[in-house]
Image (cartoon, rainbow, N blue to C red; front, side, top):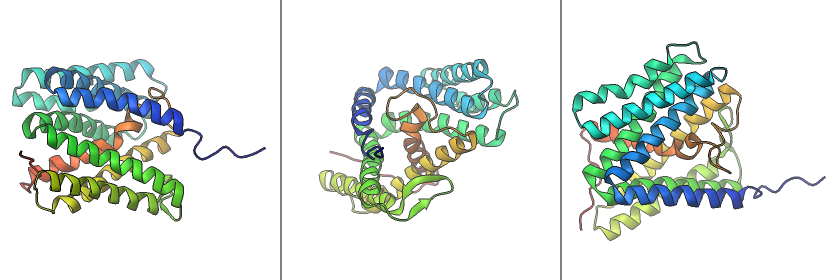
Length: 264
């Protein structure tokens, strides 16, 4: 019996990826309430998946956590009061009310999901469409070039204990792809070329986001966080890298380090 092709999942992966990307990019382009609704759904589904991964025998409780996450994000985005930001931690706290595997990992990653979703909306509304597009394209370029670089070149594994399929060639290809995005934005918006290494650094954070989610799945003994997206698994499987990138850029900004602002 012949072995299945390493490209066997490419068609369904590309098709579902295009659909998800089209919906996401349309909401990002529109901003306002379409993006807020997408963020609410992302928060709810992401926390639902995480709750299932860490307590698979409690499906009802996972639904409750997802609902709390969606409601919390809705309150934050539509009420606009800074004191509501404390509810970013609420889904993590609710999930800790029952026994689950890796409780502190669940609490920390759950908070990061909520933080990343909120941060991305804040980036879009505060820094504009070009900034949000740069961040998304850095993650997409890193993912696509990393996928093809790893499949075509192969070689030593990046972190086999946590993510057996990731290679150094794919990781480096992802950095290169992100750097190209940074170069393109720097040229188009006459931005300093420091954006090129910053884009690669953001891509590395995105890859660490992917690694973190892979570690949680490995601890749970599953391949995908859910089966919501054909060819990609669950929402966290598709957006784990964006979580890492968004949190990195948020922390970078909170440290009062310069973030790219595109004008013109």
